[in-house]
Image (tube, one colour):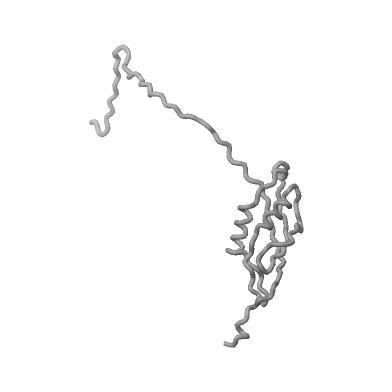
Length: 148
C-alpha cells in the first residue's frame, strides 16, 4: 500500500478535549454554578458560546453567540475559559481552531420534603378471656351421611 493511500482524511486536525466529548460535558457540568439572579427568576435555557483554541490548546476569544442573560452568559464564559484542550499536531503548522459549545442551564430539582416522625411502642393490652355469662352453654350436632 502506498503512502498516499494511507493519508488522513483531514489534513488539518482539530484540537480534542482530553477524554472526548463525554469528559468535556462532565467538566462543564461539574464547574457550572447556577447564577443567583437566574435562580430567583426561574430562568432556564441554553447558552451558545463560540471560542478559539490556540495551537497550544488554550481557549481564547470567548463570546456568547446566543444567550439567555440573568448571569448565565457570564457563567458560561467563565466555565469555557477554564477548558484546556490537547494541542493538535498539524505537522508543525500553528493552527488556531474555532469551536462552538452549548451550555445547558436547567433549574435544579427541588428535593422531596423531609418528613420527621418518631415511632413509639406501648405494651399490648391483654383482652380478658370471654367467659359465658350465667353458665348457659349451647351446642350443635351435625351428622353427615345416611341415617336410616
